Image 1: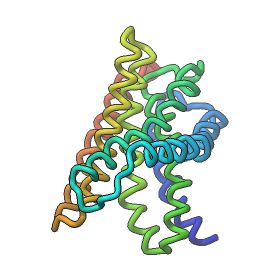
Image 2: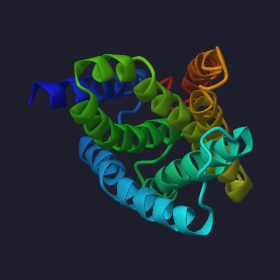
Image 3: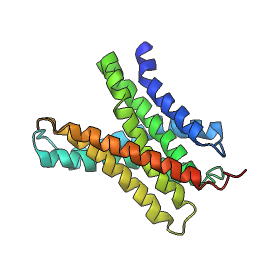
Image 4: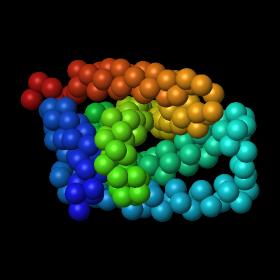
Length: 225
């Protein structure tokens, strides 16, 4: 039980942070919970199915091939996981009446991402123990949050734009790009020191995420209410 608490603690810290940042018009708690659960269950199931398909269609067996690890990072893991989150935000959260300002894109994308991260983290931590829990609390979990924020920033703009399809896809592609870059540098750990690239990409993602949050806060139509 303690390991599970260690696994989910950073997830709920991030959720609380985003909830606080939604200053001007809070989202319904029930809807937030539903998005979290969809991320924790449906998104994981979709990802698992897509992984099986990729393993059959595109088997990647050489772990020392930089090219194969690039394909795995961006087109298997990054694309698969971010797409599984994207479809929930796009087809469940975005059509809701409560999704009524651009910042909501960030809120719901993070809720889905944190649902996914919670399930994923529980499996990793139960297998790897407290050390894994501590490492992932400062790496993988915040990384999933930044992917969600960057995706949600554009998906928040999309609902209120004539270019809805384009902006939604920009959000998805940006999340895939940062997710792929983060994993790629970790996957090619046989190259000495290359893992630093993962932390550089995470740092850039965090900086951009903070700017994305502030930008939507400043432009909220509820700000003067």
